[in-house]
Length: 406
Image 1 (cartoon, rainbow, N blue to C red):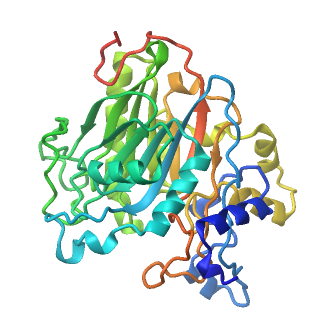
Image 2 (image 1 turned 180 degrees about the horizontal axis):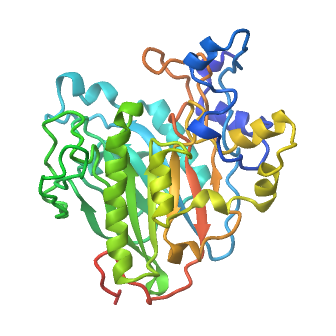
């Protein structure tokens, strides 16, 4: 069988036959690059170094989502890689024409297959064209999954994608921060605006590409109302992409999100808050350090205890280390750049050992996203991450606007 013609059905067979172990990986090394996924520049400097070449298949994450504990709610994040529908958006034209990025039926089915295996109750997603596009995708490909509640607001991004949520529980207070001014180097004297933008006003787009004084894609904040009065406040983010020259922009975005979180924690120190999404930052980056120093715990720390012990075993064979690393890679480039970060109050309710990355079809190491057509059955360049929690605190915590739920 030609691997570039692997259907969604064939993908299921690949998953069943995959030798992937059901164990997460170790924390990636400095720079977030796997030993077998070094940059081409590093390869060129290492005479005689042989790069691992793999074909189409399942190379990262777990082949099956672990079962949920009794009473647990599954929270997940998944970058769907440019989920555009087939309806023309007149505000996107020329270089940013949306119709040329319309998702194919094959890839939409592959995304849906991953989402079904994931079985998240609250699924935060990135790179969505609009609420209308997300509604179409849900109604066409996710029937029967119970995602009765969805939200998506324009993030102010010139390329026309935003953050969104699919939920089995009611959502309230959706907010974006398109007008917020970031405190970057060189604009400290500019007045900051933290005024939230409601659903009806979120249409402003930056007129400056890669404007370092604004969120490239405003985070989406919302509350999820769970049974018993439990409220979870989420910030779904997608930090500025690109190399080191954009570090300052990412750090400015992170600083503002941390400020938002601290404002909510000042109203209730035990509030259930999660910052989740595509951070475009590796585990040892300054962005990750900022969130850690702000007191936000990493969902990665709630991985399986046996795997934590294995990751600390410095004498383990390199093959075992690589296997563990691969199980925790979140992007097809071999990096971990997606996270679920938790406030202390919310971390108290996470199910130990529940964090995982879910596998989907990798296009092969020779694949070039700039010019190659992805293989049939390919879903996204990211892999979904998830963890489970058990709501325990009833109505004792405040929601994102500082009010106690009714």
